[in-house]
Length: 175
Image 1 (cartoon, rainbow, N blue to C red):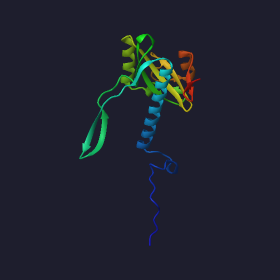
Image 2: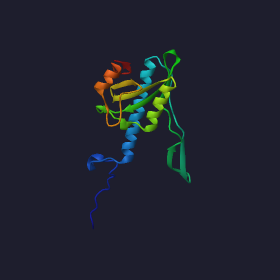
Image 3: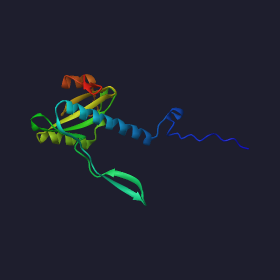
Image 4: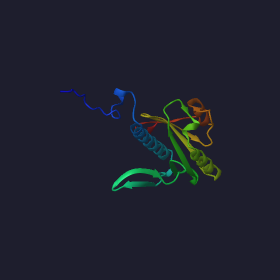
């Protein structure tokens, strides 16, 4: 009788095989991005912004029978969060969760950069919220235009010079 080894799913046991699947890392990135957006929304609420809402886009789905086999966004949106600031000015905020030491130009899609500039040109205020830590929550709120360009990222030190401070929260309270 031939001995068989137990079947181990490589996607669910990344430590054994040294890598994670794209779907698994995509789920983790989505969860972290959603948490970063919640942190930014709470920070804006505590800074006195009103009517804070996540900008959503509809999805089209492709079905085979009753099963959904794929989904894709219908349109590209102007940012992640929209709010009304002091004095009634509309703000748009693009949220980036990057725990490493640099926010890179390549972290942005071309339409995101275009929308940030269009909001500023129209008289609104555009922000890039760079979340550097989820627990405890820490972020930089950078007003657009941010000193970032191709092949030249933005370091934490440069971000602090750009805004002069960063925001941190411990147990939901600003630090």
